[in-house]
Amino acid sequence: MDSVLTRLPIQSDPNVLVGFSTGDDAGVYRLPASSGPELALVQTVDFMTPIVDDPFTFGQIAAANSLSDVYAMGGRPITALSIVGYPNSSRSTQILEKILLGGLEKMVEAGCTVIGGHSIGDEEIKFGYAVTGLVDPAHLLANSTARPGDRLILTKRIGTGVISTAVKQGAPRGESAQAAVDSMLCLNRAAAETAIRHRVRAATDITGFGLLGHARAMAVASQASIRIDSSQVELLPGALESARDGFLPGGLKRNREFVAGCVEYADDVREPIRSLLCDPQTSGGLLLAVAADETALLLEDLKAQDIPSAEIGEVLEKSEPLVMVQ
Image (cartoon, rainbow, N blue to C red; front, side, top):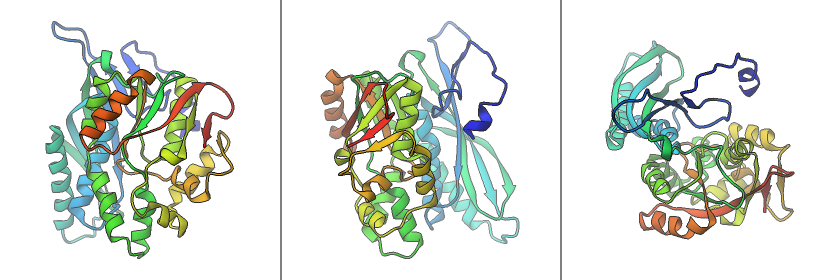
């Protein structure tokens, strides 16, 4: 996709605060000046195939995943349009109804109003939303504003991809599966609001490209390098066992190939950990870059809200390799 985007004509609009040139989580467009406070639109779209068997839960997860990009920009979601692919051959719409109800419940929790949508016939079920949010440009979070010396905070444990793959392939992962679902259902709203209170400099959410893929994007956009302490990256229960047992989704393997040329691992970083750092996450946490003197207060505030956060690394002056994993 990146190779295609670079060949497109470049548009110029001074109101575009964040476009696709930095590979950020959402686009941001400044609204025309009025008598009220300055505001900008945050716009994003995301849809996915079922990651769990229960249609209501799938709808919830898809909604949380779609909302995440708005939170990653420091925004507040206000409206959403549903995107549905559903088999024309299906004689029952009960599954679709449950998916839509699950998504709606999560949108209500977020204070985001579903105002329409679009559906097509598709033999493989797909569901998600195009979400619009609002953000104060002064509090905009982007992936391009991390600075050397910043500490990196991750606000969710990782491993949803390998655990979901294990479940799909019939491995017994009862407690692990529930922990992964609970994580995916959790909105990033509280984490984003806390980040703004503590003057976080940059942010991105960890989704399909995995932790290292999104860390790479932040490093490239910020013209910096990143060091990850793998021992501090918290894992979902059962994630390490799933990786050790070889339940690696196709996306994980593609992510490892994608970052191979810019990531260097210390010799003592074990193979399952290397895989998990590239595990594609669904509705993953936020990766926050914050000034060193604000890190302890940010972590204290996050943990007081039971947000499973940890300091996992730092931003460095740009060098080779782009991302170092210890």
